[in-house]
Image 1 (cartoon, rainbow, N blue to C red):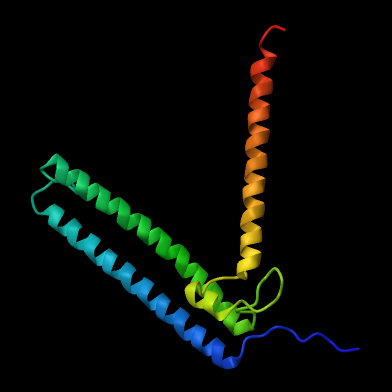
Image 2: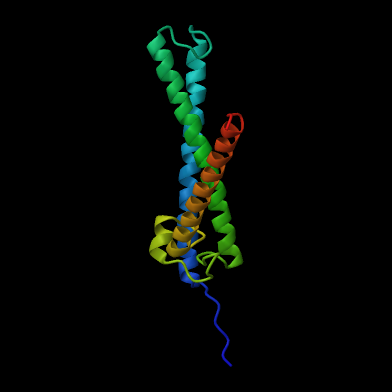
Length: 157
């Protein structure tokens, strides 16, 4: 009886993806540092005559607020992506990087180059999304039916 060989990415490919992940991590950290520097600069400028963070012009204040919101959103996304990058680097160390967590087959290199933090092959990811959409539809139908029951409960027959 032959044993099935476990899927495993080659050392060369693991090193390639480790370098790719490290570079993406450097980019995110540099971007966050730049954003923090910009925020500090704007905070200092605001101290120089205008009220703490508010422009003398309403349109400028709205624009400043929108820019801050965008920066906070980008920082939050960057922080979340950093976690995914760290998890992927950990999978490289423990030898599970590039292996689909559902079907246990190798994730194609093209997918990993596009999404280096991927934990599922395309087929398994699509199946997961399909199930999530179906679960969402069922939940919406359940909520709608419950709402209908409550509305009909109060009506005379």
